[in-house]
Amino acid sequence: MSIKEGETSWLEGDIKEVELLVWPLADANIEDVKNAIENKDFCEYFFIGKVKKVVFSKNNPEALEIHADATLKKAFSERKLLIWSYLALNIPIDTSSIKTVADNQKIQEFITLSVERASATHNSLFIMLGLGLLLILLVGFYIRFRRGNKVHENNQDWKKIVLAAESRDEVEYIYANKDEVVKFFGGENPSLLELFKRINTHQYKKEWNEDELEDIRFVLDEIKESLQ
Image 1 (cartoon, rainbow, N blue to C red):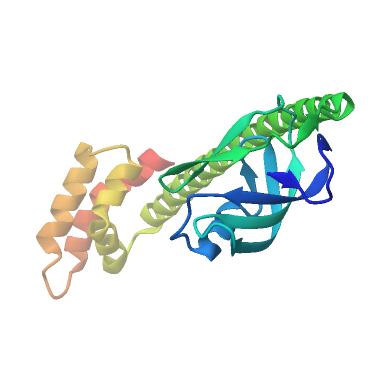
Image 2: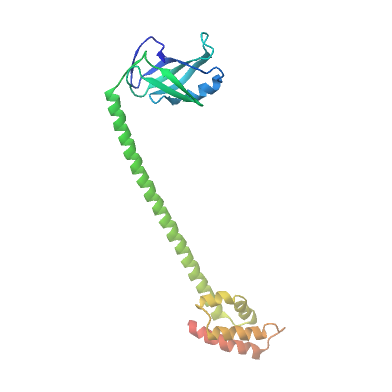
């Protein structure tokens, strides 16, 4: 790797146009190589931005010349040999012509910014968790409230229906919904069972006479008294 402007010194955070000579890549697809490095971290110490040109070297058909804008992420010791992993290859990158310089101010700013971001992320996470928990509690409370209201409304409906029942149609409606009526009364009881028995005895008749209706009303009246 070399800096195209002819400079050798590279300060952390600075962007330079560089030339990379990588080999052996005789059968490499140029577009694949470009996609592998453009807008990505490179060898831990660099970030490759725009790749301007990728061509096979005129002097070495197994080598690729890559021209790109690169940012020095962090300084490293001189004459450090870097390794770029591409597909199944570990390609050495010679950086002996470059002297990297640490920017202590930028490092401190980076650390401070990282801490601030981590703290903000931490706080945001707690806020999101708190809001999520609050939402769950509110939804749970709403569901319980609606269920309670529904049960209350159903109970009130059945109380009104039982108290108002006089005609055959009203009595048979109670029998047709006997499971719900039993739930309303908190379970089966002797009066309910007797009511259902008497209704069942007469319900298949084409018409009820006054005696048959009175037979049912006698038990129904006992149940009504328990509701008042």
